[in-house]
Length: 297
Length: 262
Image (cartoon, rainbow over all chains, first blue to last red; front, side, top):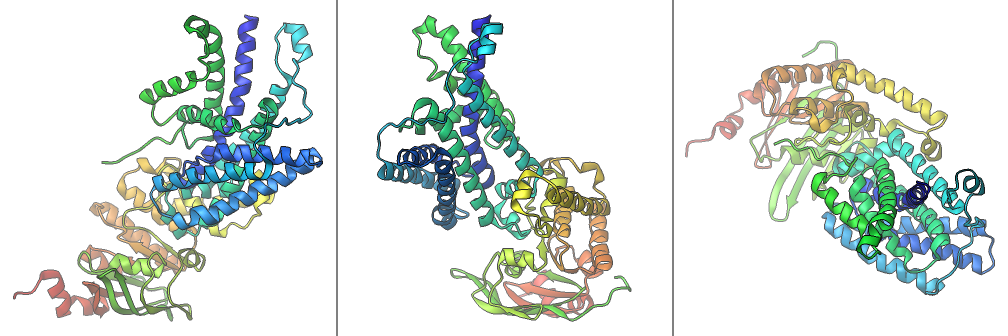
């Protein structure tokens, strides 16, 4: 039982980190209908920039602050240079544009900082929580707990932002119908700029947490691929969906690895989430919380 | 027609508007004006360029030639966002509501330009931002009462029948407290009862709020009943302009609608 709980908690904690990455996708998809393939590259760019600044002698907080500015600028430029000329184009065109953006951002990061693997130290030790180990004999990483605490806070703030505020409502309106949004005076470009800037900020937080855990390396961009099953489960347009989807994926992949893995030779953690997502697609294609596709005929 | 309101000066003057899509002439040299507080109808057979005309007024289309004078200011063409800011609101022929959002949220989006709070305060939904939200919510509730849609307040718009969606779209346009309201076939596809309701709302808006209304409508009975002046388009050209009675008896209009023997 203790072992089961340990695996479950570990899974849920890493699940929140998946949610965080998925959230970057949801933000942009909600506001512009664009599936931003470059989200993973943005995570990598953010983490590498922070580490690069720290390695060149800057304090951690200053480095994070500067990276945040860089991410916002990157987001604003993306909106201005890549998306604005493509307004009202087909979704697939926009998607292709973000693939191009992916290569550009990855290349830019490596051109500035080099391609070496670097360690990022946030000053949080990755040790089991002592009191929990002593009282219940369950090992839960302190780092994982703090990281998911940060992720959870961010996720909740964004959820409130989307459902309660004027900008959140404008975002949903823009996502639904560009032309109608313009006609009631929602400044489309303004909204997109905000979204890309916020997505850049989310990428920064994800990059820092994942980078501190696994090292800042090119493989960080693949974390974004793990967000795909999360999105399919949660729905591409739902912030709560991204949270729950992340938790389900995180917990189920760890449990599957531990309990099913040994029977099939192990290593199933890598593909289990995708199979789960595939099954889910058959049952509920719009996701747990996705906006139901309503059609009048 | 109501007795209380006073038709004012020309608020919107369209001069020699021509609009082409490649070789297709959608509008050719059209001029007409709209006076403050009046109900101005644009009629004509299908494909006459009525919707194109509205799209020119709020900047969705940019005409190749012409001059648009709005409140004394000359514009070569309009800009959608600027038009909304200047007090031009509209509804669409094919209903452009935010389908996944509730009626309440849809109408609240119409208040967007009226809301002033700071981005950061808004982001944390704190203090002034929250108070402002509540004040605007009150205004939106008035509109909901006015349009008699209290019972569907929390329903996602996509689930509503067509007639109610049209009403919600009118609500969203009204939420901006516009000085000019452009209505693109507000009664299309409605049954008699729904049409009567819609007529009443349009007349009330015009009468009580003094809103100037430019309206496209196919139902001649409705148009002749509620409009002050009517402009008639056919194949992108203006063929008549005047009071309902003048237009009704105009030979070109009768020919356009009934056809001419060759």
